Length: 154
Image (cartoon, rainbow, N blue to C red):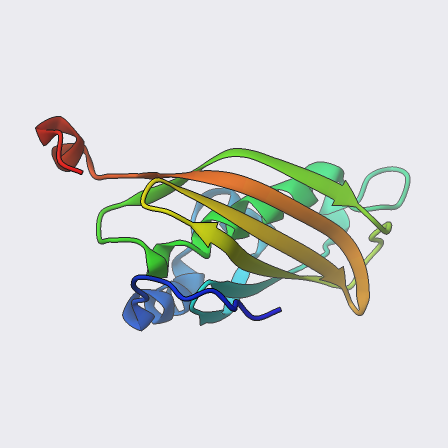
């Protein structure tokens, strides 16, 4: 699922830095074991293992784990496209769970459908091995650095 839209800017150095920083991840992405594999303009592919501690008593991956993976790749796909110092904040996303996940690994592909100076719409597909396990679409706010907001710059 490669991106087809042209983007105002794409910084491959940021994309490469994010891939190299996999080992330095913190917080929930670190706990889940999310690893960025590939960036292209408007596209991100990431994966994570399905571990036994993420499985519910019913034998399937907890839906919150899938939602966390989706939210993470929903925003991270934008960083190579944004100006330095900007950050992405998810304002909403809709997630369809399409198939039960019981093991293996998850591969998430995130694609920017539209992007303006202030917002982006991003689509994510998550596969469990070869099965489409989830599909999502979300809206993100692109936030300027605090100094720029304080000066009222556009």
